[in-house]
Image (cartoon, rainbow, N blue to C red):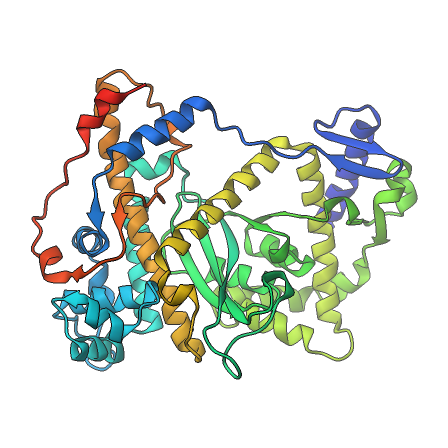
Length: 474
């Protein structure tokens, strides 16, 4: 068992280094680990550059932004008629229906606030063109177009991502109103669980119960997005972490790196007797049941192959295993593999301050998206009144698509802003640009009348930057 030998080697090395005080940021006293918190490494120069770029961004209405991104990426072409498979011939109505979902305004109020679309056009668009697969294809079109922008590479290579849930209160009571979670107060609701790439692109979203564990949804997003991103490393917080996810991520080819809130209290696993690591005895848990893994190895391999082929969803499989009244041996074997992988990850985390910083940076990108979400989904006080899961998913998908469009649009104008700043001699290195973000929205008008005809008639050319502000450089 190669991983077992690797685990033994790593435990012995960590014990050796810990005894000599050679593990940076980690102390071990009275049988307890203490890890120095990660601190933000953003410099004053990086903050100043982000502020300068933000000041140059042109003002834009959300209606105009959506039309511009549609022209640049062609994402509206993926919304095919559910019966005839033809493209929609009214882009205004399609974009208005998407914005009605994402802003939580709804079709009736969108029609009242719009110029250029009618209620009948919106109702027809919703019934004939809005579907999960169409939303998924449109999102992939934007994410892939954003990934192809040279500026996107300053934030990442599109190979790492993070996922997190965001709670939305329900606007209803009774059946269909959602579940309660004491963490969010007394109101029922739902979570939109979103995967965000290191380039800030939100490449997958699903609606989950506020009371359910997030971990089973981690793998669904990694395996079943339609983008061309080659994700190999994924970050979550504690809510996305279980031993089963550790096991399956390893076997599916992903490096799983959660930020574990209760890290010092988690026990490490070992294949050899715990007595082999006397210094680490307070940290050690039970030995790994290698015999159970060997006994069910062929079943595990077949299961993983089925997941890779798309024949079984990770969420469905994990739910099925958890539903057995008595402990299922396949479930146990997966958990034991996960204990090995979790322990190796814990050792990576303890020995690598750089890993801790990367994980924190990845999760920060998910949190930045949450703030933008709150700025967009404002109608009805951000409460989701839809009762059906399908309608709730439409809200989540519309919101995610709008965010992806904003990330794309902002990225193109951030790239435009770099040239004049460099011309006047400002430091605009890629290292500093990495601390900027394409999720800003202060220059975007989300409310007011939605002038769709006016937006559609805007010239297909770049907007001028607020270059007059470069004279105010400090």
